[in-house]
Length: 131
Image (cartoon, rainbow, N blue to C red):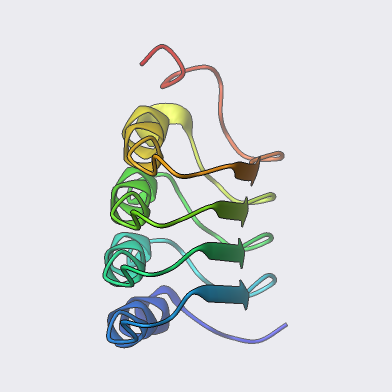
């Protein structure tokens, strides 16, 4: 329970993107004030970690909406070496509108063997799953 905001998240993503040799990242940011406007920038920063093999991110119980969720997936999709991806986004405000874009991005992780995606208690109503 901190007061981390979306702005901080974007800056963190940009900074972590400079860690070219990073192969594992675990980040627990549940119960903060992250709204999601910088979620795309965070994903793009992570996407610059070309050797990343394992990513475990917990964003549960924040205020993340779906606007940049697709862009986040596109950024993560640039991690060509990714084998394990665990994302926790429960109890946010994500709708289904950008789930297709998110899925297409993650789909570029051709070495991915272990995907655990938690999206319960959001505002997903089927829109986006048709893509």
